[in-house]
Image 1: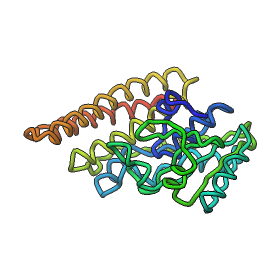
Image 2: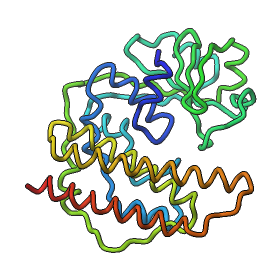
Image 3: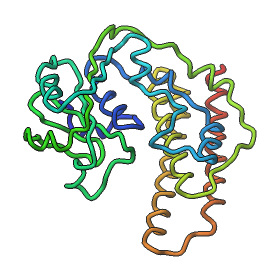
Length: 273
C-alpha cells in the first residue's frame, strides 16, 4: 500500500498519475518516463492564456500512458458493481495497483473536494485506502465502500519493466521557440501555468541527472519557478481574504517569467553542446 510521504513527493498532475508514479517507483526508475513528457514554455503560457486548466491539462502525456505505450505496464478499466469491485480488489496480486472511482459522498468528511469530477482513490483488498487530495487515508467498511464507490475499478500491473521510452525531450528542447508568447491575464491562470512549468522542469532535472551542467541549470530554474508559484499563491490567498489586489503583480510575474526563459535558453545551449 502506498504511504502519504511517497505519494506527496510524486511529480504528477492528476490523482491517477500520482498514485501510478508512487507505485511504479517501487519496481523501476520512474525518471525514465520523464523524457517523454516535455512541453515548451511558450506552449504552456499560450495554453493557459487561452483557457487551459491545470487539472485537465491535456498537452502533457500522462506517465501511466507513456509506460503502457512502451510495454512497461498494462492496465484494465472495469465498470462494475460495488460487489464485483470488492471481489476484484481481493484478488489483486501484491504487485498490482488498485484504484476505484469515487463519487461526491467520499468528500463529506473533508472541507475540500477534488479538482476533477472523475476522482480516484488507491485501495487494496482489505479496503484500506489512501487519497491524494486531500491527502488522507483510512479503511472503508463494506457499507461505506458501497456509498462512495462510483462504478469503476482500474488496475495496473507491471509488465516489461526493463523497457525504456525514447528520449523525446532533448530534441524538443533544442527546437524551443523563445519569441514572445501569450501570457495568462488572471493570477489564477498564471499560477496554473507556473505549476505545470515547475512540474515538468522538476521531472527534467531528474531525467538529466547524469548531465551535471544541464541538471545545474534546471536546479536553478526550478528554484525560481518555486518562488514564482508560491508568490502567486500568496497573492491569491490575500485576494481571497478581501485584501486589495496588487496592481504591480502581473508586471512582476512577467518579469520573473522572462528570467525563466533565460534559463530555458541556457538549458538549450547546454544540451546542444
